[in-house]
Amino acid sequence: MIGDPFRPRRSMAAQRGIALVLVLWVITLLTVMALGLTTTQRTENALTRNQIDAARFRARAEAVLALTALNLLTTPLETVPAEAVWTPNGMPHPVMFDGADLTVTLSNEMSRLDLNLATRDQLAALIELAQGEEGFDEAQRDALADAIVDWRDEDDVSQLNGAEDSDYEAAGLPYGAADGPFRSVEELQLVLGMPRALYRRLAPDLTVHNDTGRVEQRFASARVLAAVQGIALEDAEQLVLERDQPLLPDGQQPVAVSRGGPLYRVRVAQVTPEGAGRQMEALLSVQGGQQPFEVLWRRYGLPAEAPQATGGHAADE
Image (tube, rainbow, N blue to C red; front, side):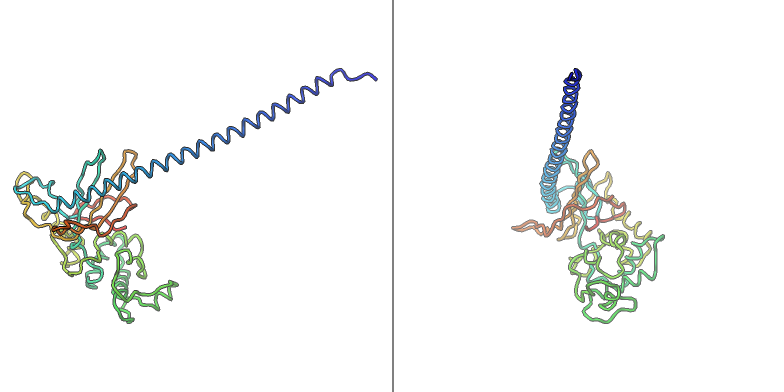
């Protein structure tokens, strides 16, 4: 029997084809592995870079806190430019530190309404101002003001439009009114009917650290002035505008003017060239003496926001 003279050639061609397929598969697998390693390396590099940037910002923010305390503790002997004396009215101050552009926002904690001591009418007025003309809802204003009072009072008797334990239960919430003082401004979010957007507008004007019950109106925002004095927001904004004008020619002001205290809210912000931002907020106690200042608390990772133009404050987290 005569064999097929083309069989060896076909066999060799088939083997070569199989080898080619195997080589292609190996190349594909190596390519996928290389891409995976590259992606992993890039992710690790990005995470490392982010951690380094965060550490640098924390170090800069801590240094700026000390710089802020020094500014508050120092009383120059002569009149100085207005920008050299940081007035705690919530206006931003640019600072260049360690090659980074930072913004420091300083406010007097006593210029905020205390959640535990503000009257029901003051709370209602502040809620109305925070709602704005477009979103003003009289029923919601009254319900929230009464619910805040019910949250902090010790009895279980509901205000006219308020909320006690039974109302929270009816709303399907696993908690009731605290029947005690607010421990933080953030706790306001737990009050029945409080929208998060409205809370974020209210928070800059509220505190739980002003146990004097008196608002330091020299540094208060326009909304706080309007709520405390019972005047229109436009009138309060005009008062703030006139109040924050330099008292002397050439943009100078007497440095002997008190900046209140002893508690100050400090927000440090940094915006990178790429547009990313980092923020830190702290409550600073400046008393002088053997321990000139103390950081009572600090927060990182705050949402970025634009500073207000008329004596506004930086918002709480």
